[in-house]
Length: 226
Length: 220
Image (tube, rainbow over all chains, first blue to last red; front, side, top):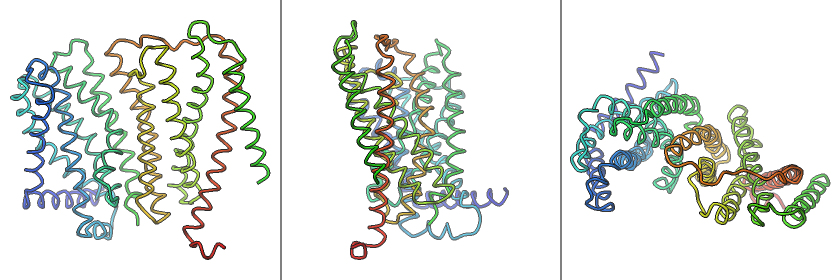
């Protein structure tokens, strides 16, 4: 077990280090997410009441669009340099690759959200501050589900020619419970949970996260075999 | 081979007979009118779609455990029959819903989940095109065959919760008593047809694989 942890941490560290040194990925991600938020405002119109009412859904769609682009790169960079073959050649459980990549994706998405939520709060005129701790909880649950499915399908589609299209095609259906849970939870929270549905959404998110994680972890070596 | 042909003839006759009885002979539902007859096709086809995807799930699991290509070929057969039947289910359902509910589409959990199911298994068929190596292709497909099936009940549940926030479905799917015997025999007939289609597609997939592995010259 500690072996698995050591290997996963090594991969997590490597990915983050690459990210920090190149910095291309993250700043592009951030700008893209900001653009998506702007596009929503343009599409919906300068109606601040409507925007703040829809803010929960808009933020999560922005996170998922941006995240899908960045998740796609998780294995793509390895594929380009032949790194995936090398990673696989190392002894030990291949699940470490999944866990390490998953960790790196989680860190990246968390960093994105720390910047995106305040930005959305300003643009859509929503006050997130009083709900910050609970919102962070929902964000973590949503991000875990998203990253687990995203990392998994990213590994699966890395060899495809049209992977930019194939990844969302496979990923989005798997994300429906995550989207509904995260959006439902965020909206319930911002509205002061009038129908006490928050617990239900949180439970759905948590349960789906666990199921996804277990199934993906179990099946991941099959994806990676050669 | 002969058994297969017999099965084919039986399915054509059975499905044909059920369609004639359902579409023309028995009286139409008094409340819904003639359009209700569509249900004698819609419901059994939806049943075949579910049956297909369950087959895909089982075959994918078997492949992951045993790594025999025949399970992969059976899963492929299941996906193709399932995708066809799911698409037909949605189209027939829409045609039925327009005069009955007044809309082509309703965000009902069952309908929404069915549409998502269709997309998932279309994704499955696209993934099969990624690799030319039969084993690799089988592995990746099996992964989606398993994961796709696992996510379905949860997608259904989450859409159900989401839906319950909105108004309840305006028109309940209450069925008239004429349902009974015709519907049951339609289920049986379509299940026979399902078996036949899977068998044919499996044979074809075997041939395709042989061709792929040996090349056309050696087959002669």
